[in-house]
Figure (cartoon, rainbow, N blue to C red):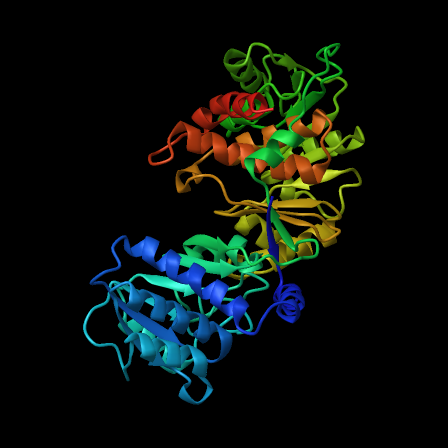
Length: 471
């Protein structure tokens, strides 16, 4: 499990370690890790040109000590001091003693700039002088110390000027901003330097492969299709027939014992729902068409005008529920059963009565607000998908290529989460495990090129088989 903590949690843990170690030892450990990461990014240190942007306090001290180490390995290192009166004096002395230079402004081009402007205690966007300095270095890759300056560490919010890092080197533990967008996107690749901190339970988690393997359902030796769980799907419409096929594809990935599909828009054969059912059965002949007992429902993908009716029928069964797409608009309060709501940013904005831009800027806060308002797990789909429980637990999904942003992928995800609910996972685990497997399936299909929703659905069984085979 990758864990992320708040600033206060980190500071408390660091203070305990500081009290038990010699003065300066913790900073030296952090600076050594930073220098190693910068060297790894450069590839060849000797002859490289490095610029340090140095703010006040320990964050700037980490950059200065790392700069001294890079000078000793043959790099030319310049430092711009943004707060000369509050610079870390011992770090500055170490840089100068090694042969580094303090300059008033950047001189020429650099192979990398080290962002030591603001530490984890900073808040809000970059101040004007720092923002202008960063803007002047456009085209120079940045390595950020702990977090990119200008992002909000505890929320993942970004508003205004900030550093866009190629690499972020963080210490002791991940911070919320490393996992939660849009700040996480500004971090680039995150390199963790272990400091040996003793930490409390995390604020945000990110599942790793071993966590998913442990949580995936496994049939017992005596299992049959009903004991493994039956997932019901009420989705699609005459306008969006493909949504039903893709939702069923996610549900029929083998993690539950059986899939039932209830066509939209009741009516005598060959009523308007018949065409959707025929299409679903042609793609998935193992699926049973018609109502019956289920352990979970998936509702709303491509439901159109039928979504409200689909939602009402599913809720009446009293089983766990996945509410997606058009059914989200029909939800006016807590669903009354254990549920996973799967909005994208626009849908979440409509549910909360805010602008989409507000959701995108502050994703964690808005997902948490929806989870509390609706009394359900919220799966906010995005580059880093967030799973938020009403009790405050949060998981971020960090796997999956950008190519996963494709039509129909959300329909597959909803069906997959429904299958995991039917198989016995609780809504929080079903949503976060489903999101991870969905992203991993896309990466397996084609991490560096286009994927389609159907390809992602077909890759799910192989992803799960490889995970389970490790055990």
